[in-house]
Image (cartoon, rainbow, N blue to C red; front, side):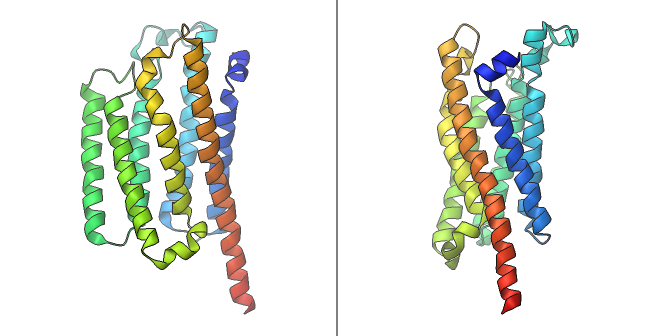
Length: 245
């Protein structure tokens, strides 16, 4: 099992997720009055880390030959797609909501919030009634979630460029969240189409899949880690300068 983890470098993604979550905790400990959405995002990163660690039960079972958890072998939970189908739905809703909360136009916020609620209803229906939640990624939810995210990112960037906030974008955590998830989704979403090829008979595809996911995770979680530390220290320095004056 350890050889498998080292061969596919799975530990790298776990490490970067952990560092990002830890950096998020550092951020809101340094900034007690940080916006609620940023505190929520920091806790959400911990959720992602623990879900990913838990999702590794399939690797454990494969190498353990189901000796530890024999009841899983013939159950619907033998694969972990069910876990990530739920996580992806939650992720798109949370990230879209964070971006929407940064907007100022009430009419646009109302429309986008309606879109989020609609996506939630459709997404839950797909999970409950599509019949493929336990053995494949629900592509419909992924594509709808990606489109929703792209719209919210576009709305955020439009708001940013049309206000004075653009002068201080480097101190805005929302900017890094938007960029991180935008790049990650553009890189990773296409490979989910070929999820059916992810098996022991397709070594080349597994290597490609693992590489794309690994480097996308390095970029996104590395960006989040940098953003939390940079913004936390930047705000502290700003407060210090204000006191000195």
